[in-house]
Image (cartoon, rainbow, N blue to C red; front, side, top):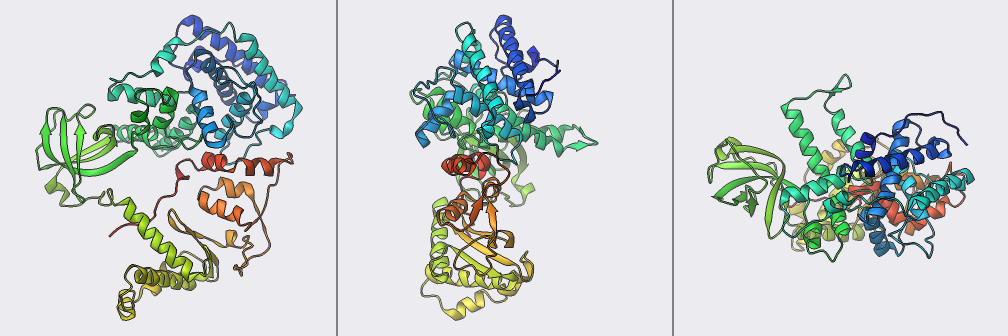
Length: 532
């Protein structure tokens, strides 16, 4: 067991980074003291091998104590996850056996195991962390020490009434109030703070010179927009839930605003002509599709800007709120229709999703007919890749229009094969695999993947093993592809570098949870086609 001389203690400021809605100095001091007790346990344990700097040790201690405060204060931040996990998978948590005396209004030993795994997995997202930490007895003892500390403190710990009140929502709440709560959950609450911090660090890298962020008006606008993007668009690692969906579960299905909060849309970005100006908002019309929306002025301000009906164009970030009302959330650029000269970068914004799905359905039928019913086609080099695509285009065209003549198709696709071959990114003799995803269309895989696929139709198989962790962690592999490979036993999958002999079974038993965790926004495949 590691012995630490670390004296860098958690301060009130550190703690308020995780819970800025404090109740009183007495409450804050209590939880800061408890944080330092947990920090001491962490510093003297094997956990410090995984969180090997003072900032990460402090962060883990704050997360665990914030969970404890969450249970004490009945704020339902963690139980929103466990309740939803049980709906999806039949038990409150992945990985662990759930005891009969598990209650979401009490501190539970599996919760502490999971939160440690979760925090470390966010920090080390390129690795799959063993949720049992190789069944190390010192690690088990450490978790028990933290659990026993919480058990001793349970009856005397104060509630954070201010945080509990803040998370409540009345049926009359305005846009600013709702967004304030969503922003807190996304950026400050203990389950999401590390995710947001990691995201925001990547955002800031774009604006750094000599390792310092160079601030100007343009930078501030772009960074602000990225923060709003995180709040409304990003899916979290836990069950691929967006922030508004998670907040709805905190409120509970019995809450009058549950459906409204849950159904807040992702942002769209488009160019809209202002058709009508009224007291409480604007009737706006998408330039390409001519679709009309009602934009509320509740969160939209055009002070000191001249707005003219049928002349002013807003290139704007919008969120669908409720009762078919849209709200501006993020950037907004104001032009005139003459300045844009008819250009619309958002021309595909309102393409018919059902029509896209129909295109994918016909493409799938063409692909399977061409490939003897097999969902994966194998080929070598740019020429074969180009020829396959042209044959697929022709097959798709005939399925769409059975009366079309071969001569017409010859003319339509003249020179296309040569063009596709020239632009293909593969080596001359590289093995290529094409997987047809029923939800999105064709996915392309290169030789390093193809050579490991023990498909009877694959002439390029080298009898190689593919690590299950790579299949899981590489988010360019769609969940449909991963599941297809596993269900059809197309790869000799193994797991290396884990002392826990049950690691393979742990992954397989929790595969969907882990696919969601490591794919986040990429878990749901969408049609990768455009409608012309």
